[in-house]
Length: 250
Length: 250
Image (cartoon, rainbow over all chains, first blue to last red; front, side, top):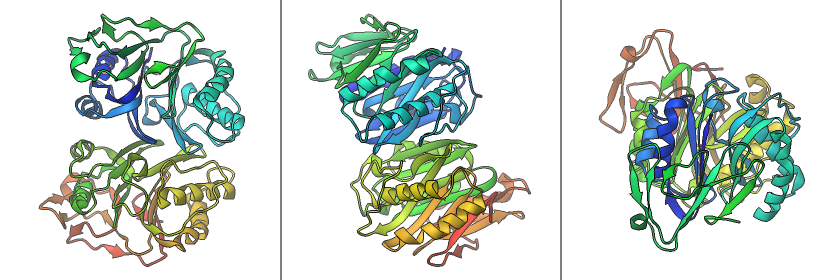
């Protein structure tokens, strides 16, 4: 299974600790990886069809503290689509003058939605097809960029359609909010004052968040599996949609 | 003035030598940089609002030999739009299931084209506006992805319109071909068998291409200013459009 990681914060925050935890799991997920960081409206996207353990780009991301309020990362285990750069998540498109970022964990069988709009897949994954369909339907539902609350309502109507074809755990962001939708497996937590320490579940690495933060900082982290020991991760229910704004569920 | 660098090759080729030459010029161009590499239909895009001399991402790109047949790079000196990630070139959009990459050197004054299509700027540069308009008009002119020759004809009709607003040197690629359009300043050359040696015009670095290539390799390089001494760079005329396929002008 692929691994998803999402981060939404009220202040620019680095994800080196969580990304290290995610990359540690790459030994089972050698079919590429990717990570997208919003900086305001701008976006940095790093994708690589190599394993996150071997990739020089992943090594740079682990060392270089890119600070962002919205991050989506993905480690891929191919189910549909060959191992190729164009099939690495996250996928990016522009709609209403904003970048949209999408990553998916799951498998949609026999999923061929009608794509008559402005968004076409470049690669051959079920995931990118679902993303293109989703943006096409968002563009039909709203004339220009709606509020986060309006987008959440529309997504709540749309997401069950691709989800009917299989497992559909996903992360979506437009730089204003992070949407997380669970099908089979997704966990989240909020880190805020008073900050404690945490240890990565899979690697011999600890961090004392109190030393690295100020009391007003708040960050929500979403991941396929809990990344740390000693913190209270909440499991999402099948079909549940959460939206995070400023480091909190909205 | 910004600096453009484009590469089109008949076999995946690294651009470390040329990018080093470009980055050397970054002392006058501190307002960000970017580079896009096609790998088949897939794309890697690195953008950074920091100077290419200081950026850890640029250091990684200089060290890590990413091999590609189509590359577009840009070093920015802001004329319109603040120094911000969303204003860094190259810009990317998807059309007809292919990524399109665009970088511009110049200044379009009072340029506000009607954008009624599927492409809207995320940042606030004249360049991204021109790119969005161009893709909107390409989408109107062709129902699905045309041949390179058909695209060249359409571009020849479209490009004079933004160019009427100021200087408009540009590089454009969809992964199949590299289009270069000169307004004030753009040079190109083809490297092919028998390969010689070249020395960067601005840095104390030489490369013997004969040692790094096979006789069938062929690469076209386009740059604002000639990057090397001892090679025959051709200056493009104002208004000239060149398209490069498999390392040769088509």
